[in-house]
Image 1 (tube, rainbow, N blue to C red):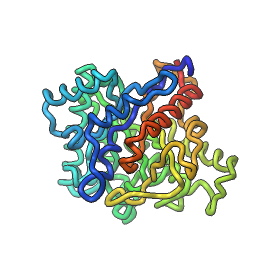
Image 2: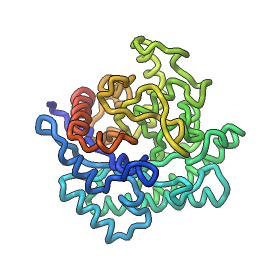
Image 3: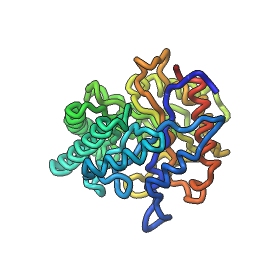
Length: 346
């Protein structure tokens, strides 16, 4: 395929949980998601690792060190490593809004601390050679919009404290740019917030499905980059818009998700109006996944200076029947191999 061995290629485990449950289809156990990952193979190439969600029934945020070692061993025995981990910082999972009440902020920071503890221990166990701890603001766009200036100030204060907690554990945090979360619901406010926090260990996680909606101005028409009623056949205008977006956010990007989007929003509950993850080869997908990953990649990257070591596929809320098909994972892996061949480094 290519001499490039970086970035390493990971599969996300949370699609086995997100959108699953009592009101939907059954969830997939962690071992089942690992088996899907290990079975994928294209031209002799396989996934290098997985990114995980610190949430039951995959990984309890309050897990003991001994039980965590058991999970690490189950992953490593499959010749996989762990990269980034998702901290469950939202209210229904024990957290709270980063711009909420004092109690909510305390809960938010408590979950960050627990997530960083797990991430650090996985590193000490030899199971996690790279990656970040992912979070967002866990705050609604409606609450943020009541007083944007005050909201940004409070978010910055909370995130500075979160970054200090992460630093104590030797970890980095990445804000996922998702339009359902106040303060990071559009690209301009995201850049502003990152500049306000100004911590070396707090950066941005770019998810291709979510950042496409930044271009379209969902939840923030004033920050729209593409024109209204945009013609998706106009590749030149799209590429110009993508350049504007990536020029602003690439310097902050320390974690990257490969994903597809059909230009619509999808979600439930607190994740309402967020990026719809489509299959990588969805005929309605608006992205040329391989081409459109390029502007997010660091220029002249080497193993020593690259801001991220791996990339991860993110595809949530697919039907179980789709996730059980081998072609689903082989097609995803194939696209990621093309990305590495075209834009990676050795």
